[in-house]
Amino acid sequence: MPPRRAHKKSRTGCVQCKERRVKCDESVPCFNCERRGLPCHYAVQNGKGPGTSSSRPVKAHNSQTELALSLSHSSKRRLTGKESASAFDHLLANVALPSHWTAQDPELMHHYCMLTSKTLSRRNEVQEVWQDTIPKISFSHEYLMHGILALSALHIALETPERCSSYLTRSSFHLTLGLRTFRTLLHSPTPENCCPLFAFSGVMIIYAYASPVMDDNTLCPLENIIEVFKLCRGILVLEPFMHFVRESPLRLFVWDGLPYYLDSQSLDGFYREFLHQIHRLKQFFALEDINATERDVYNHGLSELESSLTRMRDAGLPLECGMAFLWPISAGDDLFHSIQRKRPYALLVLAYYCAQLHLFRDFWFLRRLPQTLLEEMKQYIEAVTYLLYQYPLIWGFCDS
Image (tube, rainbow, N blue to C red; front, side):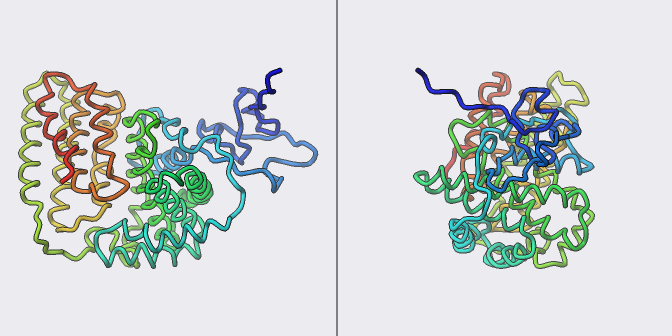
């Protein structure tokens, strides 16, 4: 006799999930209802509502998508198309997690302070902010503590594959709990909480950039990268409070607060060639039979690539990882919609962003992303544009 199949439906889920016959995570509100903007109601059973039992494990939501939705809904410059709510389900959905802190957490904090924090910047003074200032802030803001422990566990999982499974589970636990508080606070930022919110946003953007390359069995990289771009753009909700950040110990995270470094290396050669290639691509768009509005979208994306590289050159070497996120913040929603629809010209613009990411190849969370995206995009690049695709392809797969 075959073993009995496990029960997949929630017995104490919300009314809406029961009516739709889908699994409910039993949080308040549950993830399914929140994602769809529905009211979430529970039937009272024996005097208990959802979450009253302390023994029930926490369920990991699609936490990165939750973050993308909360940020994009709060931001004035949000994506208006249908949300790709399933983009990160393969990472966090349906994972049973412990409902409490464990003895593994001090190890994660130690790893963060001694190792992970030093990988997030190339400048000693910025490393000190990651290593010392961020943990101190997290002592008063538990969601930030969850964020840095989630990042630490992810770092261990990616760097030591033999320990991957247990640390990914722990990372999911901390990410889920951190996001629950963060999403609530992000709706009403204040001068008092804008700095920890800014710090948590930065941690989550780094987490999101690393996540699409965690596993060979992830969903389509192009679907994932759109979710990542939403996270980057979501930080715009804190824009009215950035002067408080600039006056705080986190000021070095804002690039205009960085001291200029003279370095034996130079960006000038890459800069000149990159601008030349962008000019070639703009000329190509001008000659192609493209709708004028669509052409403006592509040219704006290229102009923002040029602008972000100019800021990198002006900041001097060594570059900070946050500069890799400049373009997604400014490129524009219409371009991301075209990338989502796999339009060849939009993918060409994205390919040139991958070439720019070559400058950040020694950061562990950006190491494989350009190659992953370029490989995925090859199948959608038309023959007429393939020569223009060669430039980002060469840089994207260059190790030196």
